[in-house]
Length: 181
Length: 122
Image (tube, rainbow over all chains, first blue to last red; front, side, top):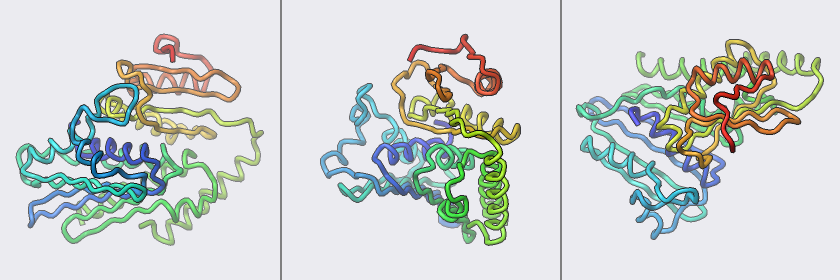
């Protein structure tokens, strides 16, 4: 994966597979502290301690079609290649939280990439899940919560062209406002 | 956070879309499914889905449902796109680049002609 936004998409897919009904994606960029932090948190079925320790291993997966699960090991490796840290915490029945911290200025730190299309994929493609996105860049914050939108839509499909344009533009404007205040 | 003013805009969008829907017969909607497992993402599935969403937005294609799903189990054919039209067997396409996704939308979804060159057995 050449973008952090693709890792975010990949890890969020794990949350979906864990039957989460609510998934939070938080990106924090802090130039003065020289960190880029990504948190993906869900309220899915969670994992016990034994499984949690094992999932860092690429040869451990819940998938039945093949024996390799690369998403977590890849993301962990990406963070550690940038003098960063990687942490997963989980509780069975409560949920899982994945936190990756990168040294912002590190030469090997891959770009954040296309966050808008990662979010569009998740929000439009899995509308039954409550998506919450927070983007902090130094002092600026953008929060996107799809709940008020779904309340207004009152059952209208998110795949309606005018609705998708609205969501896309909201995300683009919000992210731009944070990146260039 | 979407502001009150923008949520008001959204309500207008919703009212207009509902009004249009009421004018159409309810036949069931065509569903487009894109695989988004780790292999799919690595093979470019997000860009494929991006093209599909852009076509829907720009050509104003209504009454479609787009879904993304985890690993479909056909890794060597990723990115995978499936088209399920009401009353028809689901068609699975493999190695779908954004350009091929465009053909699938234009030929199959809009005009009803399956793009057999990229069709794979499910």
